[in-house]
Image 1 (cartoon, rainbow, N blue to C red):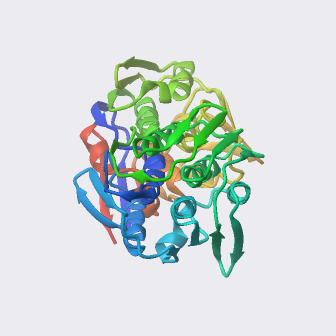
Image 2: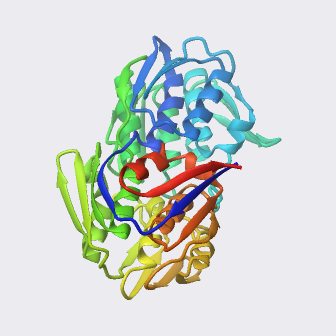
Length: 418
């Protein structure tokens, strides 16, 4: 078991390189299943546990993988099984993308129901609605989803709610369906655009990703390609917020500033200096900032995945802050951990009210999920004394080399194995 130990109080200075986007990569790797000819070479793959988990899953169904630093070669030409039922599948939410990919290519799939972070109810009803609309028969029994179709036929599908997972999963299945598919009320996050671009690089015909309507013209086959994953919007936002909280000046490199606009806008509203320059963003902070009201929204709104790190910053903001969590109903589990460090927070349903305190104090806390783990790291960096963070396996799911990156900026952070 790993523990992160942090001695807080140091300002952050320097440059940090952002890795490939976790939320894009965990969909792009299953999407590579759709290539029946040649292999895919995917660059800018983040070195995180969720990716390692997916690698094991893909190898388990017959894909051949070869890793070279931040690149991964995926050869799916001789897949031997459409049945994904390992422990890795069960513990990882994004494993449900295997359903859409296997269904698209083989017209059948059996995938164990996935897990992931305990941040609220995350049904797959919209995924099922899309698969059935394309002509698949879906059953859920013995803890697994089975989908089968004689043919997949393009159609119009209107999602009842905006869902990133359903948008991507149905898009995967529809790429090889017969005729035209129109997806309406879709999610617009950057990683959806990235997956669509990846599929198009393999020969798919997808238009409109990033808007409310995605139009897909089915093709007969997809081939391997070379592709590079976009930078991680959430990792970048985490380092922006950490710099604002700790004080100092950090340039965050390898980013797409447009993807960060909602985060930059809130930091600027608090009184923090944020400047953009090409593929980098620089944050400068003197640790004097005011509270704000924040609402999480689907892209291009403020991302729910950044809400928890942002709450650590707001614990020491001047005055009162209010966070309205509009995406997940259980995304304030980290609040009790922040309270151990002296934060003044009251949660009422999906709303958190934070009254800023002068300082947090170090304590033994735990990461309850991935983004809560990032929140605890930021809290530890600004707290007086020493903070020990348990549950580091959650953090490792989405933040590559987090202690090394923060060390390079001047933080006192280390990992211990117990």
